[in-house]
Image (tube, rainbow, N blue to C red; front, top):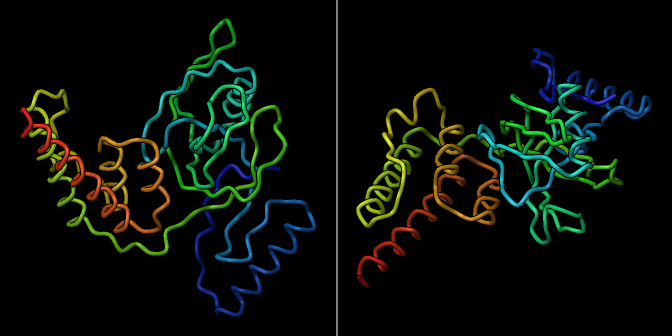
Length: 252
């Protein structure tokens, strides 16, 4: 049995002692029945997760198109579509997407398929959305695609704010306008419209997705354990891009 919905049950008003005893009982039951277990720390569920290592980083809330042509990942697509199951995406730090033998990051993101198409030749076209962050605790033998024991990778605290996010977003919008005036093709951003419906966490990931950066910079953002840290990391990238752009314009 595999857990498809990784969300914890709603909190109930119990004394701390009763709550802890309940967690211990649930863990004992899970161990006895061979079900996914909660980790010793933070009471995080550990589950067997189909994995799709990629040369790019998936953020929570981001949309990612995938063209699936390898036989092993066709099997993954068939399983996840058939069971309405999520899979994990992690960055390939060294190696290639095709053929295996790669070195993978330990922190990634769950992906949910919301559009799919299977072609006559067996290929799949997928559109996936990033859900929650995960950490790889153990890699298992391929089946035939990569499989891992994963657990949630929650933030240490929600210390970010919409105000901080808007400051970073406006700085990014200014950078984009400068880049466009220098001849670069960039999308126009309306900060107020861009932030509609987003809390601080979601806004931070939206900004990170839009900021021009490489996969290792994006992985650095993904591994940060708070919204404020992620926004600070993105702002550092923007400052670096500003300096590069100013230097480029100064040399013309």
